[in-house]
Image 1 (cartoon, rainbow, N blue to C red):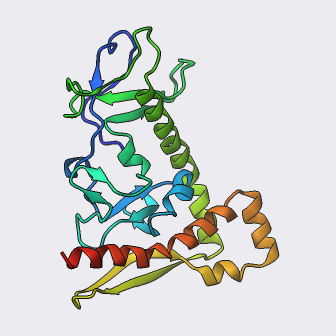
Image 2: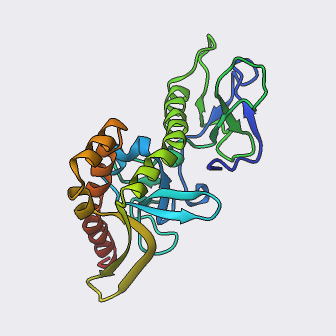
Length: 244
């Protein structure tokens, strides 16, 4: 699953990059102005408080979870100018110009995943940015935050396939259509997604519930089901914009 798309990633080094600064900012050019954002099971708990969580089949990638953030293409109703207005920002948008470096198969190095930075990203090397390392060489608070976000992504990539496989095995996902009519009578029909069925989740047999619980997936299923209540809040955000 290629979620990083960096053009010039290099491993961070506390000597080579002692004075490197990175600007902590968002923008449409960084993918923030999108009506669906890829998310991972490791962030379902935080994401479900803000966004509807839907599923899509991506060519060559399999099933993916996304946070629905708008109805029009390139519309994020939680993003204004250069800032998010939601309490939670999806991890892929929090990470900025950073990525995870995974040792290649056959590499004899004992090192685990490392933090990389894209030197071609316009947020890197700005005078107004945040330092990544302290004068003594330790990680700054900003870099510590980035490392936590990257850890959430790394863990989420590993968890996604087995979690979604269980959702499918127990037939919890079903194709559905979201039909929206705004105050100004503008209509939207959103299809191509699968939603986790509350009814199917409630109808699971005890042995199925037990298996999902033992796999630490049952709680995730309830979080995804609860997130669908955010569709009405998303409509309210859209309607508020149509009145301006």
